[in-house]
Length: 310
Image (cartoon, rainbow, N blue to C red; front, top):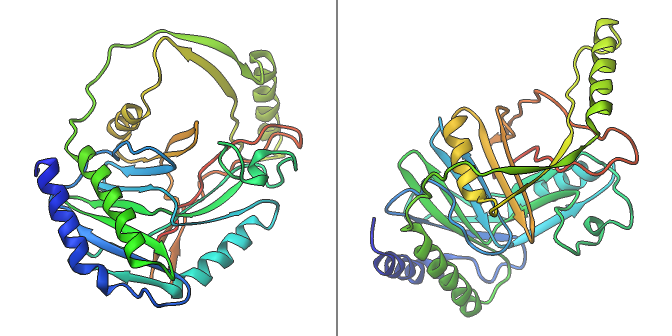
């Protein structure tokens, strides 16, 4: 791959050449600019701030987003309807510019948690703090998209926008990105001991929950249940979540490996389900299992359930 300075100069020169093609004078909506990358990243780079990454090893696909160009949050039983309305309103006003004919375009992440009605005092409702919101539609300011050996960086903004201000912001994003794309992949570490901090529910209550569920299945009351519990662990060294994402991708190549980070909160998962795919007017979802809170008073279980691609 190009040296960081060479890559940065190439991307910034390409940005200057194509910046004028964006519809700056449009009164509303979004605009995205896709620029080809000379080499495809294997893992999402580590850039500070809000970010997410999705990797599918078998398909050779990576999508990552950094910063917030636009964001919608919702809570309560109508949260999906609200976000769906926001997505439908956004789609016809989203201008896509692809001067390098990469075939890539701007996209958004859609995710929501298990509890449809979190407590009113929660920081998730106010938008304050570092917790993941209850429901989220998120357009990143800088995004990476890789499919097999092809890749592009996608820059997005709300409209209208100041060309000079946005040029400075996007030049800054490209400088941060170029410095990380040439970093070597993390090497394996020796296993580290973990201290068990307990679980919720406790082991005895968990076993009772499992026995009760099996009894209901045998009695025909339910056909299937997905049980979960929270386990606290503490390590002697900090958890390297980028390395964890890489390991999960290698161990489970048929799974979608997900990482979302806002503030000090990180959500990492590997799921065999197709989260959500949009092709023209066709929407594909694999609803293998659902997640629900155990009771009205249980803590919110953050669970990514979909990725909306324009």
